[in-house]
Picture 1: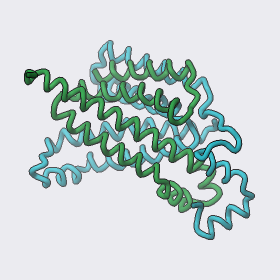
Picture 2: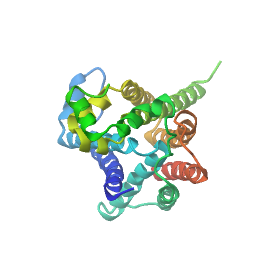
Picture 3: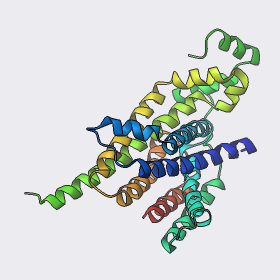
Length: 158
Length: 132
């Protein structure tokens, strides 16, 4: 784990939390979407808060995919749940909302859970020359740099 | 003959299960896809953005994963029309966390040790409390 990877995990949590918050805020402004009136859906998408929320969620997806490319699912998911904690803290200290005791307890449980996984390794070690699913990245690692460049130049990996 | 109340409860929980199941399937497929792609930071460093995009979009598991997540989203919409978000949100999220721990162990062969089980259970409980 290096600094850049922690940054990616932080990105997953922050994008998920802020994206959800913006989307929910925006949907409160636009009101209910009806399947019979598609104009209500378009109006919702044109709402600036909803649009920002969607952009943030695209950011979430990109960082999430990035994290899954080098870490286990059971490592990334708890880490991304820190976003919920972040949301509650924003509600308390920025929006000055009341945060109930059960919510503080929830924050404590999630933080404890994240502490458990963060103490362990990020990825399960893969066996050398293993199954088909570990094939492509093994192959990528075994290529020499100039060979990789040639492959990339000649049209990719598949 | 089922009463309207019990039908509503049955629909609510069936759709919550569907949301959780579809999102577990989606997460597992996306995780497998990205593992096949390999560390995108290394790949980007070696071969550039285009190689990362090409390799990710060229992976069938990636699209299957997206499809499953879309299914989960529609199940969520269905679920929300039968029950409150304060029930559906935390219930689906908690079930997804627990389900993912099982699925990652079985299908992704991840080493889910005691630490990770504890994390999955604590986070699931925490999410339920937070959203409740």
